[in-house]
View 1 (spheres, chains in turn blue, purple):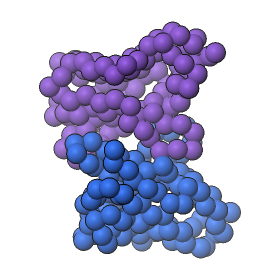
View 2 (cartoon, chains in turn yellow, brown):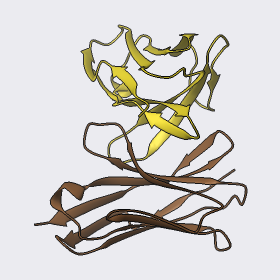
View 3 (cartoon, helix red, strand yellow):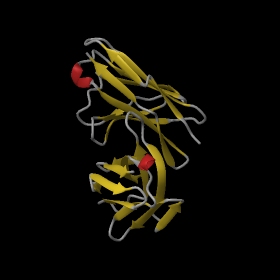
View 4 (cartoon, helix red, strand yellow):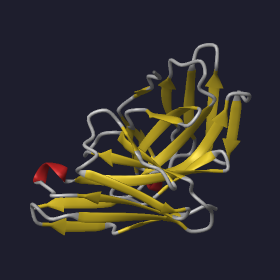
Length: 113
Length: 110
């Protein structure tokens, strides 16, 4: 089936640095990629929707300058957390629609120290 | 917009028993209802889905039922096994808008 490969699976960074998370569609073209954030014991919260070749659409309350999304090709979308702070620590997950369904990446655990 | 409610938030069953998780939605335009299993530290994995033109779907020990009139759908897991322990999320999709339930933490006790 369709696979979305997400890397890294976990990352620890210092406050003030930036972290890039990649999601690749391995056997299909993902014109759209959804980016979610998940806090412990909570549901997934949609942050933004990226579309290949155009600007991402951010949900209300999500800082676009802090969470930079790039969808430069049909198989790669990236989320960069800029100037990370401890409150950005969370589980980040991407998802792409494919053949009427949705395929999720394996998630990235970000810890900012 | 859509509002998806999921119950219960936690569920413990003995191995071999059945588990049922229920979700309700508000937008009658929602037409696709997937269920996901999420293990700790991993992304959600699709386990079964149902579309609005079908009332029931079954895949081995897992089944989903949909009542469009009442706007609710349920996940049924029979003959539960310890490896079924995880968090389960329902979702309702309208167009490309994805609405998750709040999740159910299922524990299967050996």
